[in-house]
Amino acid sequence: YLIEHVNKIQKISKSKIKIKLIGKDAESNDNSNIECCNKTEFYILFTYSFDIYSPIICGNCFCPIPLYKIYKSTDNGVLRWQKDYIRFDDLQLNCDLHEKFALKEISKITSNLSKRGLEICKDLEKITNKPAFYYLFYYSKNNSKKYINRKCPSCNDEWLLEEPLNNFFRFKCDKCRIISSLSVY
Image 1: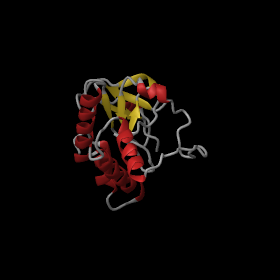
Image 2: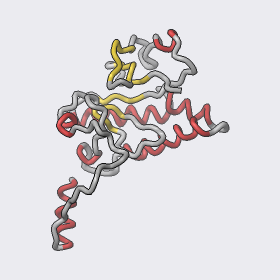
Image 3: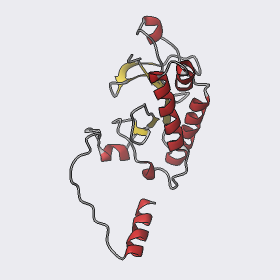
């Protein structure tokens, strides 16, 4: 898809596109490992308020996967979902008026936003033939035993991991394809 468009531009402009690396992206993930992402075991649909990268991340190294490596079209709903998620995350962080509504959208598995995210994960699995997990935000004012031992919000099975995945994700349900973390607030 990308190469096809580059070739079209080169043909129309009658010149070669040259790429020159002039420095590292200050916002980039220093752990990025292209080889890892080509061999990922699973994907995670994950974003947050200040995210500027692809919301599809490698389950092995937690690096963002460029959308053009997965989708042939730019109209796949992923970026619209990401923009909506970021808007709700902003509201729950910075607003008194709609904070509860926004928090429900990003933390309830039955919300419209979560339903759309789960559909994206299903489509991603069909395209890649690899599992795709939906990140479900969960907020608690403290990391009490009850909070840590909570069950999967979809099937009510155990989902606490013995060791955190990528030093961040503490909960993972393979059956429901949901992943979550401990609250950081």
